[in-house]
Amino acid sequence: MSDFRGADVLEGYIKQCVNWGRWGEDDSLGTMNYVGPEQVRRAAALVEHGVTVSCSLPYDQRGPQTGSLRANPRNVMTATGADHLAGAQDILPAGFGPAKGYGRSDDILIVPNQAGTQWDSLSHIFWKGKMYNGYSAGLVSSAGAARNGVENYAGKFVMRGVLLDVARHLGVDSLEPGYAISVADLEATAEAQGVAIERGDAVLIRTGFLETRRHAWGDYAGGAAPGISLHTAPWFHEREIAAVASDTWGVEVRPNEIDCFQPFHVVALVHMGLAIGEIFDFADLSAACARYGKYEFLFTAPSLPITGASGCPVGAVAVL
Image (cartoon, rainbow, N blue to C red; front, side, top):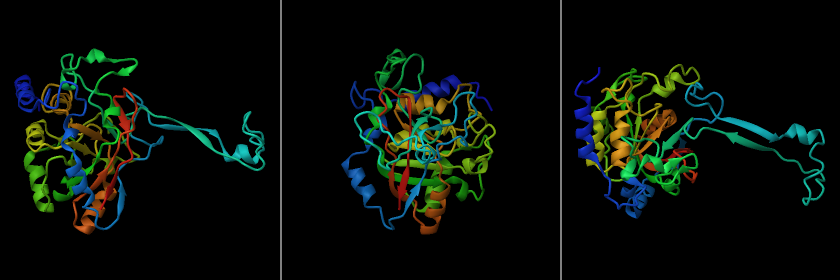
């Protein structure tokens, strides 16, 4: 339901949560500044079972994109085993010498940076002509982002991860489209799981929505979905959370709660500088956490250093 006081609500949260200038006028890391050596050492010490769990959706033509905004990834083979067997690779390019039985495969990946499991960069969203830290939106051109590009996240996202399995806590396979996850939901889930949220954490929120739509996506990309409420923004800010990721297309609830497109992004990404991850696959992680009774772990999801990019595919792994 739309809130007719939406503009006032939004501006109030912006003033409450803004981090512009907090880490200097040249900062392009935002809340990832909360993750330092102490947080990384603590995260590494959480490895108990040596079990690794992928949290990334496969990058292929069976992904959730419809082509209206983004297309699904396409891997194009430029050299194949069939070429080798047919003798088409018997002569290597000049300077390489004769093949003498040697063969190879090679390929090219064509992928929108935000087609699947991905991090938003801090240059991804603008508000009234500005992006995170007050930089002008004009700094993002056809050449990429001169500020806040995803390359600033390279070598980051090695940290303590906490799965808040809201769907499992509420006893459902998936939250319903339009369900707004509240602060009460987040805190009740954490309490039931026996885990506390701490400074520098990556909070991973499972709604179950990806699992119900897998390979029959419908309007998963951009349609109605469960997600975190705009009104949780101060909770993320006060707890100095470094990153949030979810198993939905846009992390926040849709339809949006006020008359503004993706208002949580406006507050949290543009003004707070919160790292936001979307389309993460938490099905296996949910099962592993329930099996071991362990909802905190080493979380590794480094960004590719794609200079000036507004987002980045990611191979995310939880280590329990």
